[in-house]
Image (tube, rainbow, N blue to C red; front, side):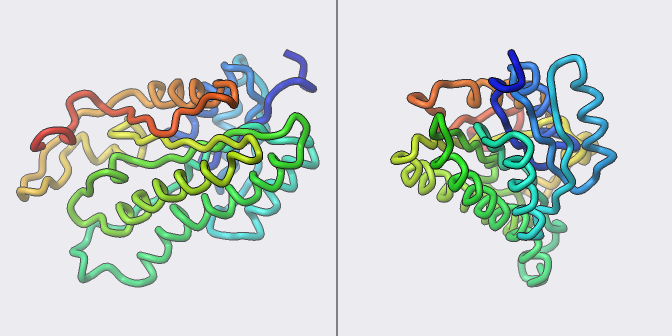
Length: 252
């Protein structure tokens, strides 16, 4: 595939975990991937891992800074002139403290990263995708199993992930007239730095602390690449990819 015809994708939080796995899978699927994140050293690691798979461009971007987000999309337009896929992946959690002890600052930090940043990124993507030729594109949001069910002491994270579901539905509807398809991938226990604590054990609703099964993050990356590669007349609105034996379905 020539660079002129290569589809352009942005992945936020591309330096580690699910973002890295998705970036590598998208590169393998033929996308030129803009690797966005705060830590350039981690983005360069992702780029190096994907050297034999495809093209990528690391861009430093802070998802808590609207100006930095705007600069990211301006850079993409300056270098490539279009955008085909946005994966809103970057996210964070608050400390697992009792609900009544969670500070406003901790709440706002999670909302800023997990909800406001995808809102702003999606706005920028809409502006680009509706005016480009060929028109349209695809946006994929990283939801979570927490978009369905909470863990103990996770009010900020769970609230934002439930909100992402609303953002996915609303923007998918608003994108119809512009050939913009929006979907969501809900991930459960991918083996990433964020889930390392599950190896030793995580708090359960009954008060026990037990280890939980995890899955290779590559399974998530491949799922994102599948969603991204569909023609725009087809859309995966919601997909759940989870460790088969994690406590979610049933009663734990």
